[in-house]
Length: 293
Image (tube, rainbow, N blue to C red; front, top):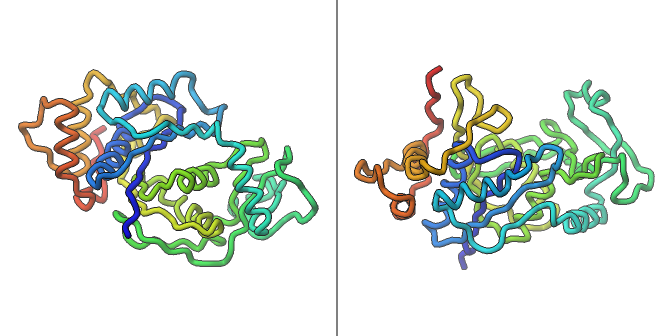
């Protein structure tokens, strides 16, 4: 019995949608729709100090203007703190997490990597001033990415015991993303390759929680002329919704889908329908061309 396809796009509201995030949204949308699957939206608003006022509404308006319409209700991580704490309590009962007060300065001698439990006194969840880390094991974790092939990571050596709840009381991305993907029955994730290095940690959490990991596909990134990935931190320009069809056509080209020349000037609806009918994940190139300086 095949598992129903449920994909998702999960932007952080730290700024408006840019071309790199549109590329990821389009690829995940087409991959889901081409397999008669659902496509969900999750707003990863875990870090209020980094969020931009109005960014969530701006992102959702941009997606709608480009015809990328989601199924079901939007998930907001800021509304799921009780659930994340519940899972941390579950991991604590499994003796899979531990409290930590180590500073970055203390970890610097080991290249920032934390290895081994550093505190065994009774500390309750949550406790201000304490981080909670997943206790990693000396294993070589292996998984297959649909685009990148077999990936391996020696979790304890390369990553170490990673944070699930920060000292400032904010839940870490690694925890929230796994809990949400499990709870919403996400089966496939199509996202940028900048998140490839996080995947082993997420699979490790799936295994701790006795759940089956999703199928991953990590896309090449759009780079700027300085060789940096397009991102809000690097001041990537906001996409213009008035140019939505041109944006979709450009992204289809970048994704190696070879849209027909006669589709230039077509509506977003027509372009997306063509994209759904002709989608081939394997046509996505290993890297994208870098614009001239």
